[in-house]
Image (cartoon, rainbow, N blue to C red; front, side):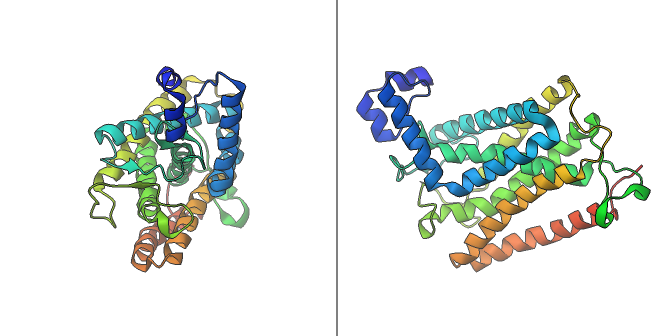
Length: 298
């Protein structure tokens, strides 16, 4: 892909907002850095969530696994977006408008910040799944406030139940994100993309949510076997990981609250209430699990 980009005419690259991933001149490097800085200024909320991911993930899985998790999810998401804007697979047909070309960094026709969101959303969904499925120490050894102390066994954290529940939470968060993002012209996101054939869920096609499931599945199919092969040193195997898990859950709810707030702010009350109806029961179940009223313990 990078060879194709580098062989493009310079004026065409500038028109599309494309910057080579291996800059050949100081001018191109400065253009890259300038666009990257503009992206941070234009999308500070994305980089705030990314910073929260980089703060929380290494505490649970270490820097090496964090790096693998991020790179795998980002590459899978970028390739799927590249494919879907050209073939309709796996998200269905959609197109970026290019309305922010020159204001933020693009990779081909895809805004950099868009594919950047997938890794931290997948990690936050992973933590939500772990919060429900990790075994707990004896109820006699509960932590502060009566919250259970979760273990972090390899078999559980890399098993199929965690994978499937992670994908479910990953799709659920997009059920909140995508409809409000589609209305970006009514808030500070801007109208950056559209569906040629609007779908039934507040304009979003069902294929989009299937695409998110595909991204989650492919990413975890690559990461979880890698987790099994890496050395287990440096991980909290014999200590409670509840606090680290809750940091990831906090990231998930941070993204959720941000998007629900924007949803109500732009006057989409029905869309916002739909989101609340999805997450209020899930939040209650999570609270019960953390207080030791459900799930397994030893």
